[in-house]
Structure formats: structure tokens, C-alpha cells
Length: 357
Image 1 (cartoon, rainbow, N blue to C red):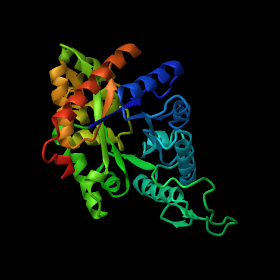
Image 2: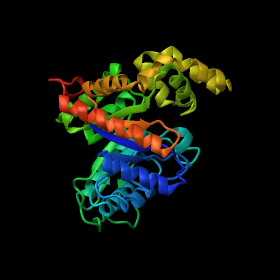
Image 3: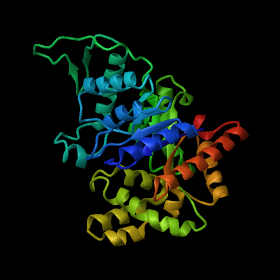
Image 4: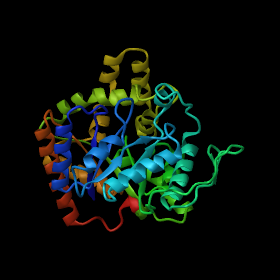
């Protein structure tokens, strides 16, 4: 199992601190670092900066929002970052949601899974260096009836550039298994891993692929503490925000994911309270069990056992959320996580990890 980290703050202001995090992650043996975008800084530009500061660390967009760029621009950005980083770039795509796509970008949130599919297919053609001609349900290139013509990429081909998809719903998960090189998972409980990995496996098999060809990433906040109940209370506001605010009443993919994993009543109630303006009550209603199940909280033995649960569920890259009020504290947490994962790797995986069957 490998380890990845994310820059979780959407608006990064301290670039010296961000650089130090990337350099220390690289030194410690982290496999990849991922940048997000919501309605602050974009996901791609920070990676261009960090590509110049690092030498081995893989750099991924986690995620670049589909529906905000043309497929060709997605491919051009990816190929540029891949060239600048010496082949270390990973293209992570995700649908986002209607509040961002329609409210911030002013674009319709229209058939997001089909849009993701077509963007991946078009990017693959561009990465291969093919002359671009494509006819899909959402994109037709060149545009019919216009003056455009099919063009061949001017940049060198990048056929090995990996594409990851952040997916939560069954249809999107199956598409991930069919087309992507990796999965960026959230809202994940190892005990209910099949909720996610099952559809990914189905998609892979339908495409004549093995699930083992995909890098499956998921994780949670790591908090070493002797008082896990108190730590869970501190994390409840963030989970309440995901359940209540990350989407509309009609479309909250995080809420839906928790419902499918056995927390349907709790997820609905937190969302109802949040949307009705009772946000403090919504935070209080987040089950402690859910916080402890989706994060790694406790002493070192507890965290080690939880990491083993992720590995045995089929996760191939653990996404470490680093708890700490300072960068030094977060880096100390990261170092301990790396040590525990290395120990797990030395002990060997089970003969047949459920997620890889």
C-alpha cells in the first residue's frame, strides 16, 4: 500500500509552507500529492509551481472539475503539467455538483457521467497523438457546419498519462472501472468497501480488465490521540458540512454515499437540519460512530489496525488527512503514518484482498 496526501485548503495563501509540505512528503516517501478546486484556487496552477520544487513526488489534480473546461483544454493542461513535471502528473477528474457548476461557472450540470466519459475518451486520443475527430452525445469534434477541421496535437504524445476519477454513485463507479487508471474515493468505510469497489470491479470486467490494473485511493483524517471520543467531536462539523452543505437537497453525492453504507436515517436528518438552518444541531447529530469509522483516530495500535482494514479492503493507496494545528504537527503525523504503512507492507498482504478479487 502506498500513501498520498492532499492540499485540503482550497485557497492556499502560504506557498512557502505548501512547498515545505511537498518537499517533506517527497523525502518521507509519499507517492503522490493532490490539489483540489472548488470556488477558490484552481487545481492545476499549484501543481505547476510544485513541479518546479520537487523531483520525484507525483502530482495530481484531485479533482479538476468536468463541465468547466473543454475536453481539449483538459488534455492540453494535463500534457503541459506532465511535461513540466517530467512525467509525474496524474489527471484526476470529477463531476463536482450543480451548486458549483451552475452557481459558480454558469454551466448546466448536464449528464455529468456521460460528460466525464467523453472527456476521458477525447483526452486519450489527444494523449496518443491522434488527429482529433470525435462524435459523442455531448461533444462532436470538429463542430459540425463550422469552419473548423480535425487537428493533430502539437505537443508530443503522452500515452502513459494516468487518469483518475473521483466517483461515488454506482453508475459513475462502473464507468471508473471501465475507463480510468485509478479511483479517488471519499466517504469510505472499509467495512462497506463493496459499496464502491463492487461497481468498479463490474466496470473493469465489462471492459475486459482486471481490478488490479486500477490504483484505488481512499483514506481519512489521521489523529493520534488517547481520547478518540473528544477528537471525534472536533471532526463532526466537517462531516456535517459534507452531509448537509456539499450539494443541494436533490444532489448531495456524499450524503447518498453514507446512506448506502448503513447511515441513511442519520444522513437524512443531518441534511434536513442543515438545510433548515439548524446547523449547530446538525453538527451534534453526526454519529460519533460515523466519524470514527471514516477516520483513523486513536493510539498507534488503533491507527495501525485501521490502516490494515483499508489495505485488506483493497485500497492500494491510503490518502492521509493530516491532523495538526501547525505544519510541524502535520508532518509528524505523516511520518508516523509512513512508518506504519511500511510496517504493514513488510508483513505482507492477505492471500486474497477482497478489493482485488
